[in-house]
Figure 1 (cartoon, rainbow, N blue to C red):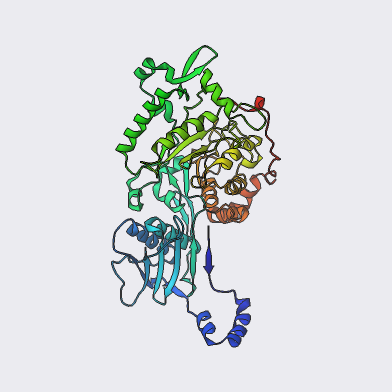
Figure 2 (tube, rainbow, N blue to C red; figure 1 turned 60 degrees about the vertical axis):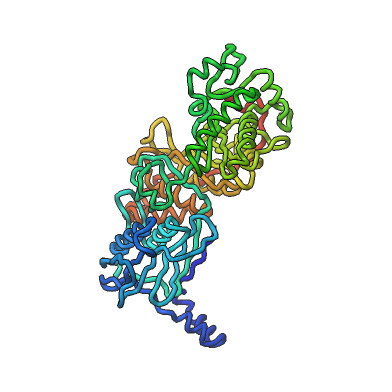
Length: 501
């Protein structure tokens, strides 16, 4: 992430700047004296909003969002026009721009008459619009309330320029609030809702974490009857588990290749395909698969059954690498012990989702002892081209309405994920919007996935004062005051304590 901002200097520094002007000459003085770029004054708009190229690819949507909230801030009516209007400044939405990062935004005063609000395509321009509104004081508190402090002079510094981009390139959430698509966009999040408005911004980012082995590729019950030997063999009960496969069975691979090839043929351009184990399924314990597990024992000599994930994913990835070089094949690690990387790797087109479901979610992720042999092992063996994704949990699943003291937990987790190179995250948040500070936690999640290094306390203060200045202090007092504990000194536990699926 990068961020460069130039704003007016505070009054106390004017003397220093004035002295510097005498020393370094008139050009510096002229630049420092650039007049403010005034957007509205005394309830009258001083600028019109122009989507570059007209109503295309969501730019008009971004322009209308600017018009609405600039109006709330200033009391002025802002016009969205097809082209600049004589006598008015121009807010140019979606001006030509070459980004260096995905979803990058850029806001800058180009000259005395033009403020550019742009970025990486239509989505970057939309995020630039929201960033400008937040800079001017807006706080998107909830799906039905935006804090917008009114002023009779709405302006930015005459040399204002800001560039920014998110650390997490995919910031997804599962919550009741995701159905409020404009709100999700204002938070710069992507929910699961399939609202067609996403098509204006290049469509929704596709990711694949479904339990696909038993749920998609081998869900045919007749196939299970005809070829039970393709599926995971369990010694206890002498039976088969249909949520996973026998990774040493060659006929199974040929059928899997056939199914995936048909899917890729019907979905050209799809970026990801899941080859993940079924939910709560078991690994194969046939003699051949056990021999494969022995090949990839951990550094301590212990069997790591989850190597079967990588055996299968690597085989699939190699098969499709030439014809589908842009497709990532995902495994799903649920918190069990993962290979340490001493004798197994991921193919360049293999990626992992890590869902540490069984850890204590009342603590930050780096306080989880199991992370030593799950999250950290996956991060260590992930290819640089396909860093791991995280499936985060921020909910009390027993009851979404019971207060859950996790307000100050995610900031530490987010920084931990950044250290491990995680660039995409999906979270099961407190689902009910009437739950314990649910919208505040969602807002914090949005800010910290964009910038994991943001100051948590400043963010909390900003939100509480915007939501209700009168109750901000009381809300603060109602939350735990102790900071999260420091990260655990993680050590690799014995195989006896490592969960088996």
